[in-house]
Every structure is written in C-alpha cells, then in structure tokens.
Length: 138
Image: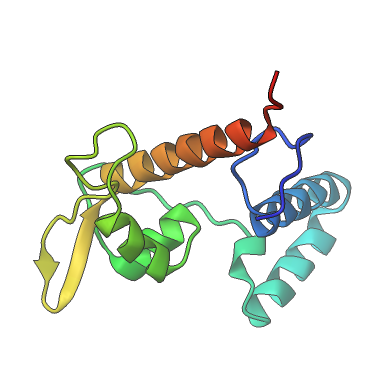
C-alpha cells in the first residue's frame, strides 16, 4: 500500500484516495454546471464506473445484505467482505471483524450495521498500523 502522510485518512489505499479526489472534483463541477455533471455521470455509468455518480441508497441497520451488496455498501470487493468474515476483530479477537448473519438461499448475508462497523474498525486498524510504520524510533 502506498502511504501518503498528508492524507487525512492514512489507512486508505491509493484507489480510495483517487476516488475521494475524483468525487471532490465532481462536487465542484456540479456546483458550476449541473447539466454537464449529469451528462458525465451518465457516461461514467455507461462505462461501468457507477461509483463516480453517487446515488442515495437507504439501508435499515438490521437489513440483511448479500456479499455483493455488502461489498457495494462498504466500497470494497466481495473477496474483502469474505476476508473480513474470517478475520479476527482488532478490538476483540474472539469474534470476527464482520459476523455472518444467515443464508438467503445459497447466499451468505451480513447485517448493514455490522458491515458499517467492520468498515470503521478496519479503517481504525489500518490507520494504527500505518501510524506505527510512520513513527520514527527515538
């Protein structure tokens, strides 16, 4: 992972940082020209980059999401969701970072509240790891 010590959230990857910067530019473009921003949003979606055109999606905290849905909510890959479901929680190693909820047919599900908690715990954990790496010995 490339680290940028100036970035306000040091646990984020280069891709997460690039997306954040792109969304900042989008926000300013929308303020200057909403029609142009809408046109570019449609183009981004057509090209398979729907993340660039934010849409409001409301989830209830106790709503069960499939692995793919949880990944979309968390902004990570489905593989990362499965990894989190096996990874010990950094604050409580006796539990996993992302508890599995139950199956929906052949699909595993996760509660929205647990996905959101896992994102925050993972970011805190990676921020601590990065901070330790950046600390110079006395």
